[in-house]
Amino acid sequence: MNHFSKIFIVCFLVACSSPNKMPKDIIGIDKMKLIVWDMTRAGILAEEEHRKDKDSITIAHRKMELYQQVFNVYHITKDEFYKSYRYYEEHPDKHKILLDSLAAYAGRERQDLYKKRYNPKIVQE
Image 1 (cartoon, rainbow, N blue to C red):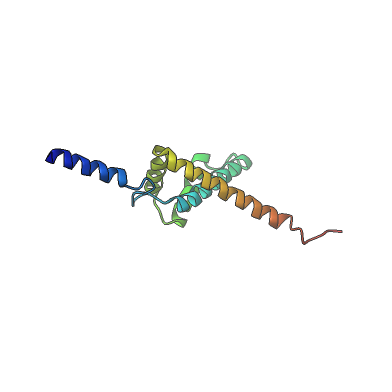
Image 2: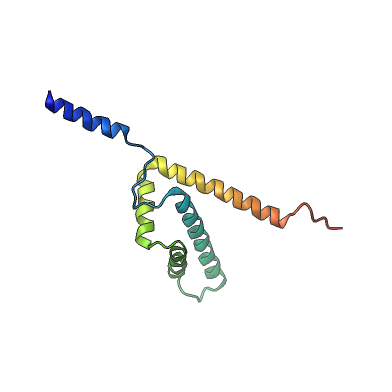
């Protein structure tokens, strides 16, 4: 009976642990979405630069330079980012939340850009 009690307690503790709890060494979704957003923009910038100037450094090298700048802005290392990104890929429920959050953020950024560009208060005659 004592062995059964130990198994029951372990199962109870595992069942009660929060499914939304993140390990301490993983970048949270709110920060991660901003990092992924900026890294995506950095990648696009590197591709645009390379398209305009084929004689410049390789696109992969330029992307890595820009990615490092993103890591510096967020005070993280390349290893911290990729460890966190792998964590999200290995946890589809959290990865979906990250991607949904990123899509919503992109939508808000797009709306803000349109508002700035097509301000309805300015009427051209």
